[in-house]
Amino acid sequence: MSKSERDRRMAWWREAKFGMFIHWGLYSIPAGMWKGKLVSGLGEWIQFNARIPIEEYEKLARHFNPVKFDAAEWVKVAKEAGMRYIVITAKHHDGFCMFHTELTDYNIVDATPFNRDPLKELSEACRKEGIRFGFYYSQLLDWHHPDGAGNDWDYDPNKKNFTRYLEDYVKPQLRELLTNYGPIAIVWFDIYSPTPEIARELKAWVHRFQPEAIVSGRIDPGRRWDVGIGDYIELGDNEIPEKRVEYDWETPATINNTWGFKSYDHDWKSPGVIIQNLVDIVSKGGNYLLNVGPTADGEIPEPSIQILKKVGAWLKKNGESIYGAQASPVDTHPHDPYKYTSKPGKLYVHVLAWPWDGKIEIQGIKNDVERAYFLAGKNHEKLRFEQKGERVLLHLGTKPLDPVDNVIVLEMANRKWP
Ligand code: JFZ
Image (cartoon, rainbow, N blue to C red; front, side, top):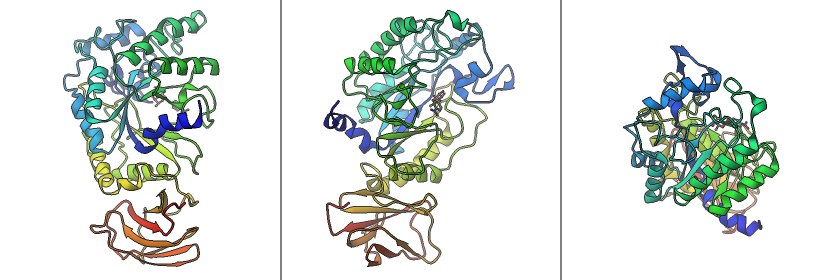
């Protein structure tokens, strides 16, 4: 694919910066408990971690009736948080399909009293609100299907036939997902296709039905840092690089310590941590895909909603420094109390820790600063500063406007800077 073709397809994603990940499935019912015992590890890995036999685990489907699910409400939460795209688990490693599929009855429409297709409802709600819709698909691990990888407690691994699984199950299901749910913005593959050839084959399969779809980096069995077959690099869970990465990349992140809901994981990241992570990631050229894990009733946990509301409030005032912003043109040290993002002719200085004397000196500014002001300031009143060569001393005053991140705009004399 040519650079211009790729740039065209990636344009909305580079602008969007911030998305909502949703891990929702049968694992939301046990919610980290099995037979009265806590099961440590990720909520969505409970069948593996507790080695739950398929015949026991699939009984959960009979109890899955998320009557409180409201797609419009979930999209509203994402929009109010300032999130521009949503990626939801269509089929996670447990093999349960959160969409209607002809390939198996082990799906939310045929196997549960709910009898509705949440991916259909969510994709429609996203379209209505201008939010891009994508899905997560586990293309290798499948603890339910006899030819899927990973379940060695119900099946003999030596009897598995991955090619059969890929050709007779994965590709037909992807065809359903890429045909029946409208425009698909992202296909978020996970834990790797077994070979680069299969990764290329799956990417071509996606683009046969949805030529505009962006494919995540985990389609690729290569090292997660490599620019591979996916359209962008997918870092490890909650991984933020030390330095700027010269390619499209994304940090997938939990809002507590699990993707799938766990009833006793209350270790929520604060709004401040989320905002500072978002700024850090954007300052290094990446996107932030932040997860919510809805309950078995179909509700996004209230603490997640409250956190996301506060993040959205900060973005309402400071979003200009995030959406469509480029990575910092100025190298910072990992422990600098400020980060930079930029747009042509503008440098956004994110002051993450307020200086006790109300002044900060920034360096490496290779252009004349014409004007400085707080982005969230009512009338963008001018800030006093002195520039000596590449050093700019900013006088901020002693009272921050925002408790988490105060963004100062430096307007450059050269409107085409950097
Ligand atoms: C995978 C899943 O196993 C997990 O349940 C969740 O869906 C997460 C988003 O993706 O977990 C991974 C996969 C790859 C890495 C880390 C966690 N990695 O490359 O570091």
